[in-house]
Length: 193
Image (cartoon, rainbow, N blue to C red):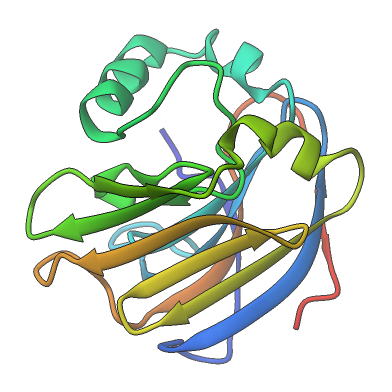
């Protein structure tokens, strides 16, 4: 399956940074903000790896269940993501490429070489993610400092990752805005700074 469409920032590779922006997405949309990513090895204008602050519409899960490979996705999530349930939203979490979700909304996790994420704390907002997201424009704030990755959504810290997985963690890379393949959707970004 094609990786979707990307808008790749042309300013070079990012290491330690803060990014603020706003997004708006249709009900079944599936998008994300990739950072510390690499150019895709075989597809021009695509990226792979890195970290992602996922963005999904409120009804994304309904559409996702209809896609080929949905059962495999669910099984991978059960193996690799502590605290995952089918009804959980992903926006504000952290997707670590081949490592799957390394933190879900409301989680503080630690990664150690080659292991699944360790849940080391709760941000007490995972059950409130739908209310935090609201309707309309959503503000994303990403802080990447060394091995600490913080996602803030509409002013709420929604995930924190301490990535001590020396073999697999990227310390620098590209920034890209993504639209996943799937049903028709619209995703908008503004006030990128």
